Image (cartoon, rainbow, N blue to C red; front, top):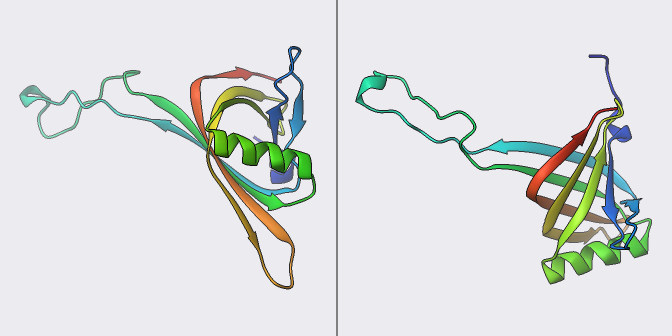
Length: 137
């Protein structure tokens, strides 16, 4: 796999319209995605000294963290509203290789910050709800 630019990972949020469109969450500087798999331990006396896991049995989830600077008040206001309401929202991530993830998530946390002599920033954490759909590019 060839090197890829981190800035080309794009996080988009759905607009809730009947024919849903996705808008880029602007101003992002960093994005982090974690795929989580809960293990189900089925070890027993016959397993010996080694743990044995049940394949495909645990709960799967995706956690996304992102941070950036304010450059789109509408998108930021929307994210703030989703955080305050606790709604489940449609999101997309597009990857440098052309792959795309479509998923529903809840805003787990939304933080504002700002230095006296600097830009206003924000951090957002998303937790997936339901299955993530992968479309390969």
